[in-house]
Length: 321
Ligand SMILES: C[S@@+](CC[C@H](N)C(=O)[O-])C[C@H]1O[C@@H](n2cnc3c(N)ncnc32)[C@H](O)[C@@H]1O
Ligand code: SF4
Ligand code: SF4
Image (cartoon, rainbow, N blue to C red; front, side, top):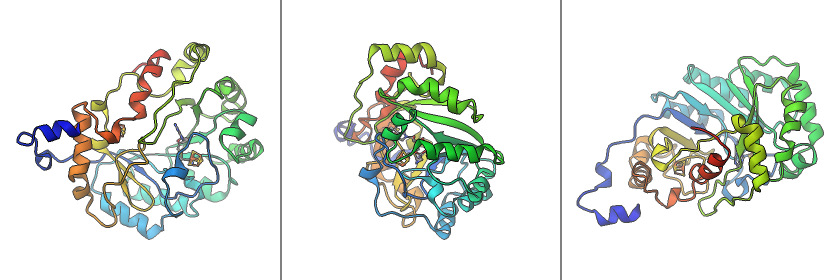
């Protein structure tokens, strides 16, 4: 892609290209504190100083994006959202600004389920309980999580008022926890009345690393034959299908604007608290990534994108779409 631009200086002036369309999808990190060090998460490699976003700054951020037609938002990032001491306020304020948006939050369930958690559920449309693996496998991959703590959390949650929230189990699949899927379904999803078991094949969220295709044929067959309908993702996906550069927004707790959650190790394109967001989205670096995707000719930013890397395995697993 970089070459494509270099070779056509007269034909492509990147700054003359159309502005990205309005943002419809936001992924916003309000804290980067976390109580776990999950084996599949690159949080340790990408976070800066620990921070909970102050409420005034949260309002400042929302003031800067309130004119966009945001339909869906995820309030999470490289941290545990509910560790933010005012996360219920964060969610309430979000819904004040975007009452019609669909709000999603993922949580690791490794803290005490208190009133303020229940209060936050009033504003969240969909909560993902991140549970991957059973007992010792869960504790291994979500170190230093404790299975007993998860059960205590779920027992308190079971009696709470779920508000508007639908609650699902989000299971990150890796070769070492495949055999636990059925147990999690039987012992967690059904008894705690969770809406769905979502299976996500573990992705790699760094620019310079690549996924290893480390599943055995037997594991692929097992997933294919038993869990095909629960596996999320798209087997028919190419860079031109990527909506992030066009309509997505990813902002870290410091205000750094990234392109997407698939490359959280990338250099930011600017800071929303110090620069106009429109300028950031119209900068030549931003547009290069956008144009690369649009032309199916990815820049270095996208070369290891897990959406693309997972397409062969998702095809093998029989995932459609
Ligand atoms: C980064 S976490 C942030 C929220 C919270 N800390 C949690 O773990 O639920 C958001 C979601 O991404 C999932 N996740 C983390 N690393 C992943 C990976 N490498 N591939 C796919 N999903 C991943 C988590 O399980 C969680 O459901
Ligand atoms: S997946 Fe969530 S809980 Fe695990 S380290 Fe990453 S942010 Fe923390
Ligand atoms: S890495 Fe590139 S292609 Fe992948 S989701 Fe991000 S912007 Fe899209």
